[in-house]
Image (cartoon, rainbow, N blue to C red):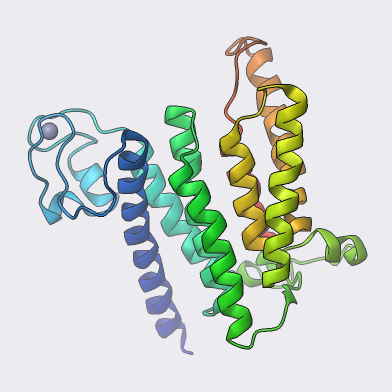
Length: 280
Ligand SMILES: [Zn+2]
């Protein structure tokens, strides 16, 4: 492929990711408010004025109207363009990492779920059943479809994102024995084990901590396990706990948070998911 053709293809993939991001932004707005995600019409939540297609262009409309409703000037939360940009950029990076194919599609779906749940958890401190349970089912469906289409159970080999983005940057650390167990695996068996192990471990944590961990987190990790298997679900949990501890301690040290204040765990799970999707 010529550099021009590759450039055009990547631009198209980026645009596709931004469009997926604007659908995600609608989900992030509607699901926690109990609104239908299937209705086509969009309107300003403040003045109820219907929004034209030109008001719904990902990121562009937000910048053009300077983050306000074009009809009543109500402020639009930065969360929505952030959702669109993350979906667009992640879609492009995953495409450069895996190329067109099944792994690209599977990781895109998982990352879209991660973006939507992180945004909703940040704003509302909840992980809606509609999304977490859909995620559990979607992971099973994706893995089963792959199996039925003749795909073998593949541990995706660590040739690395960095190799795709920056040739020659990848160094083999020589620990792939452990990696094999803790890396993403795709097969219906791994999906079922992922749901049991991912959901089971956090359910145990929730039971032992008596309310310290929400039921939404339990179902979210089960959904992650459903996509990438039990070992990778545990990797995500350990990485998310580490990131969460670092962020929590930093916020406490900076006096921005008290020791008692609960901190949503969903965004940390999502960060770890994105990390494993890029490295896996
Ligand atoms: Zn308005």
